[in-house]
Length: 70
Image (cartoon, rainbow, N blue to C red; front, side, top):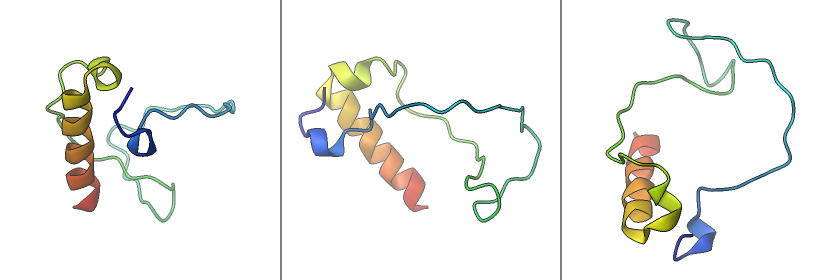
């Protein structure tokens, strides 16, 4: 749980079945596919701690805000 649930990145929505393909090495575009594959190494070692440890959650949120803002 995060201290501020309005900033939580853990959202569960009803699922929809999709087929996934390996896109490694395939150019992607936000305009065409609706996403873009980029390399990023997170500073968070254990993603289970995001919901359990507010400090890890805050670090992850700040990291993603910087990453998406680039």
